[in-house]
Amino acid sequence: MALVPYDDRDGWIWWDGRMVPWRDAKLHVLSHGLHYASAVFEGERAYAGHIFKLRAHTERLINSGRLLGFEIPWTADQIDAACKETLARNGLTDAYVRPIAWRGPEEMGVAAKATKIHMAIAVWEWGAYFGVEQRMKGVKLALAEWRRPDPRTAPTASKAAGLYMIGTLAKHAAMDQGCDDALMLDWKGDVAESTGANIFFAIEGELHTPTPVCFLDGITRRTVMALARRRQIKVVERTIAPEEMRRASEVFLAGTAAEVTPVRQIGDLTFTPGQITETLMKDYDALVRMTPEEVEKRAA
Image (cartoon, rainbow, N blue to C red; front, side, top):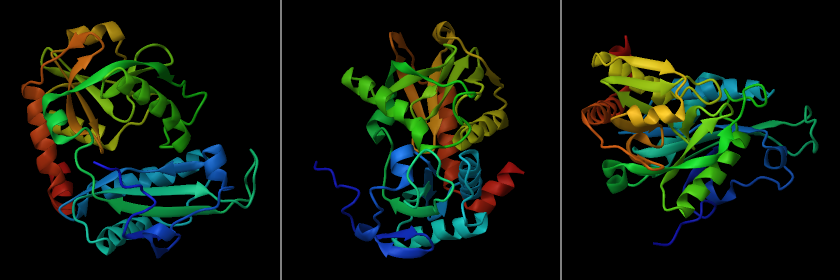
């Protein structure tokens, strides 16, 4: 099946407050965001016409920009409305939503206070991140060579474009080994996350997950933790050493793109998706199909 390039598609992209034809959404090659990774973005999913946890994503986008030293010149209400407008303009109900904000071409160099902040929002049809069949049987993770950085060396609480470079390197290396993704450790050598999703371990009936000290405290992560607690499953956030993974009976990933995806293997360790994973998969799939009002009421 031939890939459809992302710059050659039909549709509309919201760009700095107006809708532009998809193929016309271009920026200059000397934009600061391209050269210095001065860009932040979000990954969101729409289900049945509703963007799940839209306001939480928008607030994180704005905060990510602030952590990179710039203010996005649109309010949360305006960004929410633009996301909804873009989804509707493209005639989609189940889709992936990608807002991004970046520094423009007004200044080139490490210092860039004179640059203008731009923003765009695109939406497109996108199914299961690992493919439906792969998601159901569980994914295989390699152990990444690259590690998540010390939060004193990078703005790790932001969803910044530059922080994903090592994720790309790690995932490419994992795919070369015949794996689906990679498990990344943190700078200390403890378990962190996969290249683009948080990780959970079922250990003796409890759900254990690394404390997000150097990676995103994911919106899906927090959602899954809340669902687990509703099921009276104890959730433990803590430092997890790699050797502790062998204690787990089940492992799964959680993220907007990955949703809830079972893991069948990490390195030479194997796992079998079980009741906890299956229950949380079903609960999450049901939750995202609710209206925003129903989701808010359920969280109350």
